[in-house]
Amino acid sequence: MLLNTRIPFGYIAKKSWRDSLTVLVIATLVELVIGFNRDYLPAIPVQIPTFLGTAISLLLSFKLNQSYERWWEARKIWGSIVNDSRTLVRQLLSFTEPGAHEVVRRAGLRQIAWCYALGQSLRGLDWRVGAVEHLEEDDAIECERHANKPVALLQLHARDVAALAQGGHLSDFRRVALDETLTRLTDHMGKAERIKSTVFPRTYRTFLHWFIYLFITVLSITLTKVEGPWQIAVTTAIAIPFFLLEKTAVHLQDPFTNRPTDTSVTAIARTIEINLRQLLDLEPVPEPLPPQGFYLM
Image (cartoon, rainbow, N blue to C red; front, side):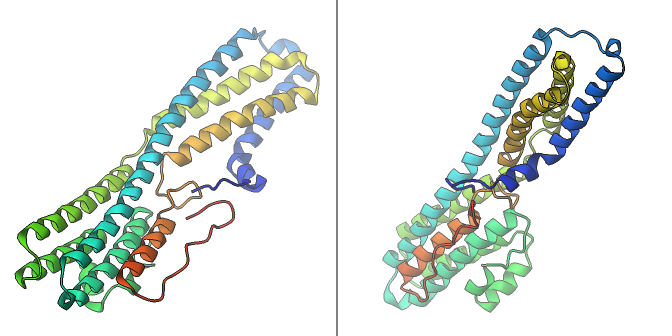
């Protein structure tokens, strides 16, 4: 997640240098044709690039809005995961007697592991990172048998809740309340997986990208009255914001791809770990995840 700080110029340049280079080539070719024989280029009225620029701006606005909605939905899902993770451990602590403390401690650490495992799985990374150190060996072995590790961890939660109920540590009402919390966690996981697996229409991005190039080509021909390098500079300066906005939309539409624009699932999981360890009175309690320059993972 990008922070409210200055974004390095190198990060911005890295995202746009290929498109900027292509625009420079287009503008330079137009300038060379002008120098060789201006009659080869058609006379294009300024209304045409104006119309194209306005249409592309509207399309970009729509794409940015849709992309931000996907990113914001992902952030809301992880906000709910924070709340229900705290609720789960709080319920276990308040619903059970001291004799069940070991089961509650194991479930609390497993919930921490679940948060890390879900974030890593959504990003397509190794689920063990941040998770396995909070699991007992038999729980980790059980997870290896499953394709979906977070689902396996929730099932282990359900087994512990059932064991507590059978041992007389939970009333039926309290067991139902815990089952509802586990159900909500399952729902949150499914919503995040839906965002991850639902691809933003590729054709929309491709057509918009080529429309921007069409706009730049028409604009550079329209600016033939601008002499020499100034035509190249003006065309490039106008093109760069369009491509940067398009890149922003592309990155926001996929909030689980391990980019600086991602939802900060690792930092959120660390926050959950801090909260749950303090609730369980476990040491050591880690520090919040520090930012990596201008973003938080």
